[in-house]
Image (cartoon, rainbow, N blue to C red; front, side, top):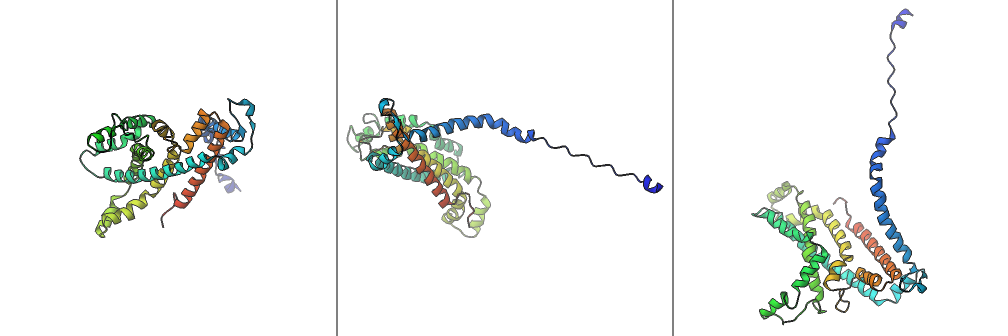
Length: 311
């Protein structure tokens, strides 16, 4: 008994204090004000658009205001040929612009990724148009397309074309002229994103491919393109959404003309709301455009397997 009593009992382990929940919640509390503000600035306009899409709302004709149900949507799909014309042109504009911007942006990224004298200056010149706003870009190209002092004047001096020709007022030339103007600003976006991804490609892969006798074309097809897949998918999706919503450049450059040849759906929505003051119908068109973009984005991401591993 004495020996057992002499054996000292091991000290009891210290109690663990219950971790305070405040440190874990602190980051969320800090970002809560900004998150609430963003939610308010985003959620309120979206809900308002959905609400007014079901209304007849025109401040200049208040006696006609009231609940319309789905009449605005029915009118858009059945009685408004301009809706279909602008939607078709929007699709054409997005496909042509995004396709050409991707092609030229990829080519520029591959060029400025090489080592050559003055590469830093070359990269700065390639990326500089992206820093110019859409309205300023339009102003630059309006001056370049001016029939008295622009490109057509100098071409006429060289015997190409005739004096007084305006590419922006001719239905046969206005679309390619607008495409070129937007290409000047949109190509650097793809070049920047693709070049950033090219910097992470290991040079060991190309060295191993050269040892195996792979040509430059095979290296590009089997090494570069698979590595750039996610960057290309993301950049084309973002740019497609931006080009679909393109208003500033086309509005300043052509105003949707001539004869509505360059009127996109968002530009038609802007004219319907701002000029015609038909905010109810414009909200319905905006809702349709939102659903179209959401559906196309989901299908595109699903088909492209964005973020998935190559088998």
